[in-house]
Length: 162
Image 1 (spheres, helix red, strand yellow):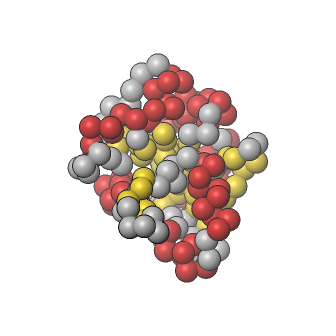
Image 2 (image 1 turned 90 degrees about the horizontal axis):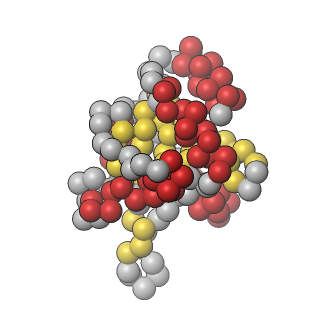
């Protein structure tokens, strides 16, 4: 986590519009830390305002840690214990990023059915990243300057311009 904060600090020195967000699996958070996430101006469920809103506590959450790092140590512990946290550096505000990520939650299966795309799970994100072609990569990571995550003991960084 220290290297992510250092990287964010360097990038923000060059571009003050950047923010740092944690994308967190709400169920893993609740099970590991013993309390559910609650919405506030710096914390948004990606399931809010969707048909799955009743499951918001267990779904993906976006936490703005740009100016309030009070939760970063808990999130770092959670990230080390369970595949449940990734870090996004982007100029988009929390409302815009919530909407952007909500659009990525639903995938269409070959038979036409809809499924939840659990990209907020670093293992799923890692598999997605490895199977995407250039166009899919550009579409999926648009407006995310850097997306940091750990999978199987390794750290990865996905850049939107890569």
